[in-house]
Amino acid sequence: MDRPDIPLNALRVFEVAMRQGSFTRAAIELRVTQAAVSHQIGRLEDLLGTKLFLRTSGGLVPTDEGKALFPVLEAGFDAMARTLDAVTGRRQVEVLHVGVVTTFAVGWLLPRLDDFRRRFPLVDLRISTNNNRVEILREGLDMAIRFGRGRWDGLASEPLTEAPLAPLCAPSVAARLGRPDDLAGEELLRSYRSDEWPRWFAEAGAACPRLAGPVFDSSIALAEVAADGLGVALLPVAMFGSRIRAGRLVAPFDTAVDAGGYHATWPADRPPTSAQADFLDWLRVAAAAA
Image 1 (cartoon, rainbow, N blue to C red):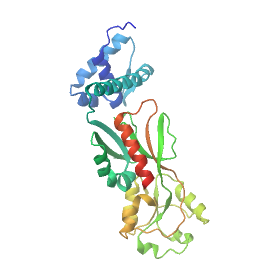
Image 2: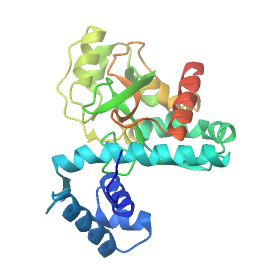
Image 3: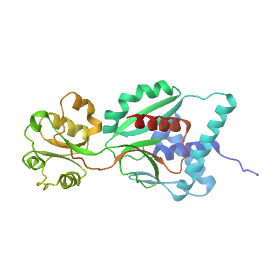
Image 4: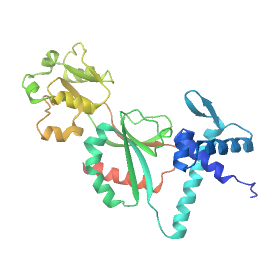
């Protein structure tokens, strides 16, 4: 088919700006000035006769035209990179940016990373942690590992491991607990998911006391406060094995409640890169072994 002059440089700048969600971050990735990025985007918009971004006080907002163009360009650039690797007979080191909820990063992923790096030396895995609130495209990520029930708009997901919640506390606190009703006399530490303690008490067949303890946005913080004897936390027990083995935390009751699990997620309209496929394959094997 006949092709008009294709402004490859401007299209590349647009693809990076969409992925980064910022002209400033796009300029850093491309190693050019912010003015150069703005100029290329303006040139592309003039050529196409349509706006690709709206500039608002809250940052860049892609238009419908920009949203339609982005996945096509991203897939095209990825395909070109794979083909060039095949033509030259080599696969270069590929950077993979993954956002990971902190609890999973500390309790499961980081202790296993040496194994991944040994097996996949051509994947430069770069981890950034979060409190389970993450926007893959806006934060320049390829994928994210998050806690939930596996349903996120616009994202494909794959379950990795279940994470039922159970009370954990210091041994000195556990010594006072003989049955679930005894928790009414303790400080019940809470996450931002307000239904967890009521659901656990219902599962345990006990009345949920009035909840007035501190609210935390991190399970790691909950665990540390509980280990210091300052309350009882409802936590994914499997993520705190090291603290349990060290005797800092104990589980006074066997009852656990299903609140979701950890899932690998990525934009549904983006085909997996080679690095992403390697990481997903490794996650599947490691999760099954665990």
